[in-house]
Image 1 (cartoon, rainbow, N blue to C red):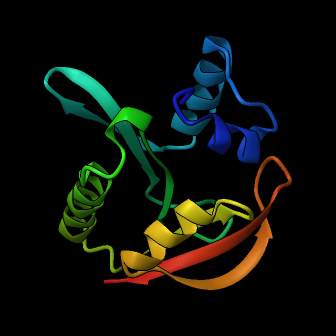
Image 2: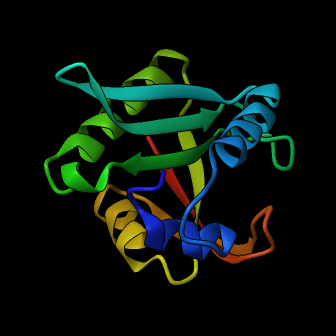
Amino acid sequence: MNSQPEFNLIVIGKRFQTDEDIREENKKNLEQGEKMFHLIENKACVGVITYLPQNPNDLHPWIGLLIIHKEHEKTGIGTLALKLLDDELAAQRIDKVRLCVQNGNDKGASFWQKNGFHKISEGLDQHHNPIAIYEKQK
């Protein structure tokens, strides 16, 4: 998480998270049923992708986070992780998935649009940040 300080700044308003911040956020998300996959390369974690099979707010599956360690950006790992998640969702007969992108996260918005997501609405995230909500139909 802390290899991407610009992302942290947009989402939580500070560049770096403590280990306790990360544990607490993960604990809350896992209690809601979120699934977390660590992206491993050469026995090292280089990223994380998470999804919530059924968001209690709209009952749709949501991607919660895709973050790649800064040293491994632009290597195709994010696209591969998304492909693997697409396969997982297809195996569960899930035909669409949503996610949010915080306003100002142009790099994130570009990635999701390149991977078939389109903006369907706007809102606020759990930190009260303005967001764009994206969806992809399978």
